Length: 306
Image (cartoon, rainbow, N blue to C red):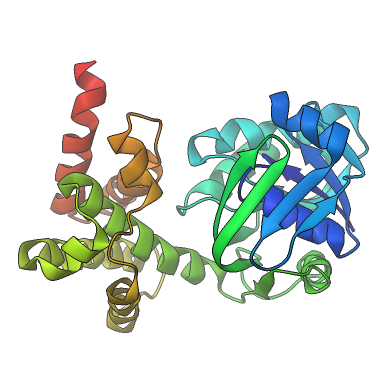
């Protein structure tokens, strides 16, 4: 299977390299020193699940310059999805699919707006990795996991082909979910509620779960997200909140979300794709989300003040 990775950084680069190890024909779309190193030396993975060095079939910064692909993994940041998806247009075969790997729930709609309805799958992943040097990805923890599926539910020939490609890829656990929207919202429940409380308080997850006022905020934030999900026909419920709290109670006490770290460092963040998405989607359905509305307003203040 011929598969492209658009944004071959810490996430897309890892999964793309593993697919290439398993026999997929990999096309890497990257830029700058990272692209130059991949062209020169290959794409290197340093991982607790086993190191690897792969040489992509093609590596380019121009998607229009190479032959088309059946599937693409979209590994860019959430605020880059719309532009990156549009850039994939000349690279994707008719009937080809794009798997978003970002945190959040809005990427599939952004992809279909850019490419035409039917190209986007739902998708999400779990991994702890970083670009440790140009052309090199370091995976330091968490079992690499990717889930995807047709937005309308069920399987399809293209998702089964992609699942087979992942089945041959070492160092990855992949699932084809019959209800990918539910899976995406379940992750959204975790990462967005945690990120909102952590970023607005400056607290680690250990502090959030042991300080009563912060834990109460966390539970309230999850309740707001469940309300929005239900309004959109996604059946999140009390069991999902309980499972999410149990996960956070077992997390390393010093852990924080990437959104929290990016905001604290003054970098571009996923604030809009997470907290902003809760507020936007709630407004569409007439759902009140006062906690997320207040957090969004507060966290946007530094940017507005500048």
